[in-house]
Length: 298
Image (cartoon, rainbow, N blue to C red):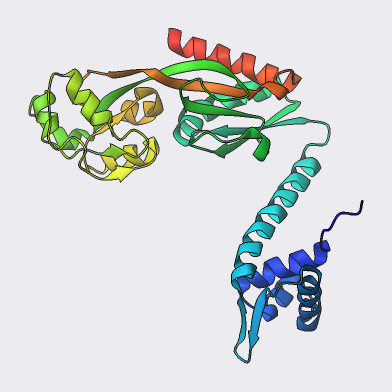
């Protein structure tokens, strides 16, 4: 049965016109005439039997249906372009599309990834930031490095490491005064969006109940917390392995060596069961587990 799909040329013309809110700009971008863009979009509207643009003497404006359809078309065209570039760039090689929590990817994984490339030059690893679980079937990802529990339906979970949060800040924020938990309670507290109760749990581990333990700027990523701490905006709870360079350079210091162990959640490599036998994924999994074992034993 023939698929009910508009022509690619019509979809490309529509996506460009929707993005620019202009047939003229779409024509310039696609190196077509304005009348050609009008014909493509007119044909698309006839095919769909839906009005996508409202025309007036001032120009064109997307209808509500046009706005919704443009978002979906744009996402699908992006996916086709991504897959096309991947195929063009992977001739003779195998690629792994890896979703990874951002700071872990940039601070821990990337400095080690060249070693994997040297061992397996036939495998290319592509990294994309993802902070929360998703359905593998709905994405192009082959695996994910994820922080949480090991419960992810349809996957194999491979433990990498736990996360031990320590209070860190700029040395300028501390001065020469001795630091204890009471002093930390009076410093500006930097909060993390994905760990909203971290400071409350840390103070509780010190036997303290601090009224303002959830106040302060809320930032999503550890890299954001590290930057804010370096600029003396406050003190943050960050695992030292994600800020090794900053600690070595002295732009950040551990204010008090009392960690908040997080044994309920950890970093895992999640591999969909349907891809568990992939030779490239097996090679990457084995290498990554060796790296994590070496780090934990260091």
